[in-house]
Image 1 (cartoon, protein in one colour):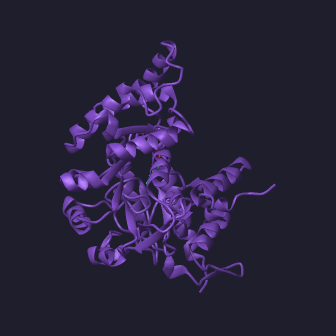
Image 2 (cartoon, rainbow, N blue to C red):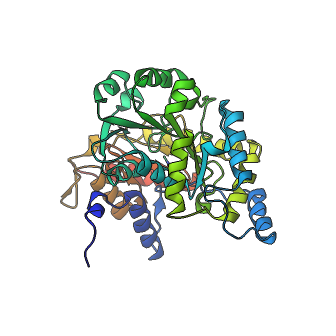
Length: 398
Ligand SMILES: *Cc1c(COP(=O)(O)O)cnc(C)c1O
């Protein structure tokens, strides 16, 4: 059997791979503490589950319109108005099978061979892969821990060429938790003014922010930038609904039409039942989310402090999402059992196999000095896990 060349353009998701490996170890009876999770550890709120059960009882179990039911599009429109003051109509919205699917449709509709798409690093694992499979070139723009893992405007300016067709912004960020202020976004908006560059604004962690951080989406910074921006969002992270697979985009009508066409020939509508649940979620008072965020916040403060007590490890305080992204590179070049730790993948393997702690190597996010720990796990797990990391690192030999 011949496999298409296209498949050689992408690689599997490392985050899912490490989660699978940790699960396998757990299944074999080993007590592994998992910091790999890319999803909240809370249950989906009961009122949302109930909406799905009602939908089944009412017989809403058939195909819906390809781009989502009107009730859901309207709930998205109200949400964007309420939270960002943005005006969209139904033909500016497309609901898909998770934000990852939204991004896939988008990248397919927007980019092709010869195009360059700027991705600030550390980045979410799927961005470069989704760009690559379109034939376009992902252009990685590195950011620094000392600059809060945010793009420096002059570095961005130097990265833009006449081939640049897109830039992906993810604030708050997976994996760093960095979040852009309105002022920082304004600078980016000003820079791309008059250029044929589409901004993909992945706002999936918008609701998970701390210390009173005020989330802004770049689309809200004026008419011109709104026309160039596609907002990507969904219910997975804010409402602990990763398994339901509902994401959406809001953007220019012409682009939405193309993405809908692609969706009509691939997945058709997202699950009808999940769409009704998502309507309920988006109409929920934010208190449903805040309960979860307050819990994340306690863990965030604890984990950053606990990491600061580990020799040679530095860690920024994340402004949002539920990850920390410590730099562990001071320990590269050290040894255990005659093996040397050359980078983040070796470090993650050491921590998993010798310390029973699952973390994700930063290399997966384009930042080999770091590892990603998700604090979407219990405080008890966090305490035990960090102790194990501390102990493991202290046992490394120079
Ligand atoms: C989780 C995640 C998504 C995708 O979420 P879906 O479950 O597909 O809606 C998109 N972007 C980032 C940065 C994420 O962490």
